[in-house]
Amino acid sequence: MTYAEKAKFDSNGLLTAIVQDWKSGKVLMCAFMNAETLKMTMDTGKMTYWSRSRKKVWLKGEESGNFQLVKEARFDCDGDAAVFKVEQKNGACHEGWESCFAYKVEADGSITTDEVKMFDPAVVYKKS
Image (cartoon, rainbow, N blue to C red; front, side, top):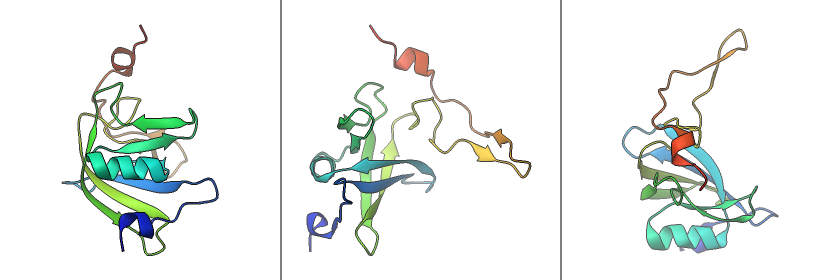
C-alpha cells in the first residue's frame, strides 16, 4: 500500500495534517491537505497545504521563508489524518510564535502564553 492509497479524504477532499517538531515532538500546527498538496509534500519534502480560507495551494514558508522540511510522515489507522514530523525553519505560526498552539487556557478560563515570539509578523509579512 502507498500513502496515496492509505489517505482517506473527507467530503471536501481534505485530510487533517498535524505537524510536530521532529526533535522535541512539540505540536506546531494543524492544517489541511488535498490529494494534490499531499503529493507535492511527499515529492518535494516541503510541507504544502490546501488553504481553506484562500482556496489555493499553500507552500508553508512561501512568503515568510519559514519552511517545514519533512522528516517523517505517518497516517492514523483510518487514514483520515496524518502526522508530519518536520524541521521547522523559524516559527510555524503566522503570529510569530514557535507553535500555532501558543495559547494556554488557565484554570480560571483566562488565556496565557509561555512562548516567546520568534519573529515579527509585521516585518515578515509586509505587503509591498
